[in-house]
Length: 172
Image (tube, rainbow, N blue to C red):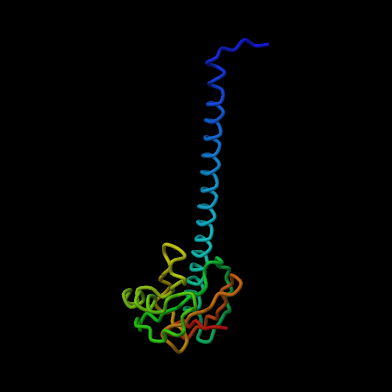
């Protein structure tokens, strides 16, 4: 049998408690890190979709009038709608067209304040830190100054058509 002194016996529970506290802190930090990485991955997915829309719009602007393509993109589940604003008419008037989960007045005010600088608005606007993007100035919603395309099953689906002087995006 080992010879242990009284002080060593009293120190053992403190060492065990300290080790448990350190283990809990490591687990909490790891869990938070995993959640942060998942959030960044979803944001990267949104940026990829925005980039793809920009690339397709640029490509179809240079093609002949009437050229069209259906684009289908995967987007994060937290996104309910992509709203496209005509840059030349930066004062949206069809507030009813907004997606259900967004406050129309707040989104309308945001679009007016931006003064036509951005063409793509993601709703709900509190889903990410940046939810408005510039695409290309020649991108216009079909026959209106604002077009909101609802995201279904984490998929964005729309049609891009070259009109010669601009590229038109429309619902399918």
